[in-house]
Image (cartoon, rainbow, N blue to C red):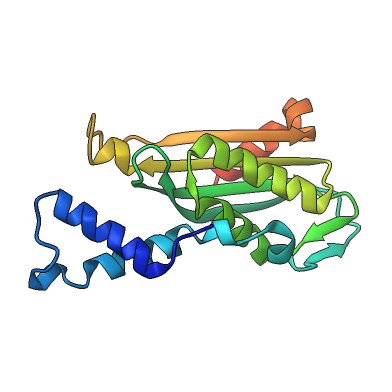
Length: 189
């Protein structure tokens, strides 16, 4: 259960003051409320569920070849430092009598990305959700992202990217299927 907006803003005010700043100075007076609203938006995935999000956008189809949705941008917050990670998600699935409405892929990515998260778990959650709603013969998800916790602090490496993958069903069992997907997402770069 999330806190009321005012209470969340009070916590931001305490953090600002705890850093040695004056939360009452002109430039910071409205910052606690703005930060609270921003954090509510950035974590709205906690208020969503898969069934409502998909909203019956699964359709009968004879399509049984690979479907790829590539370069879905994502913005998430790492659960270790509460700093953003930003990247792209590539999804493929092998329909088995049902296809998912195109916009639902982006909505599924956003639902799980808009939570405090690590990329490894995000990759798995997206793949399992798509498998659950489509009953696909296989699902593949690759995420590549840059992590502000590595770029802005700690080792401060500006050009590093993390890539994660999750292969389910035929994508895990068949090297040829997996290779086809990986080739498809790498050819357009």
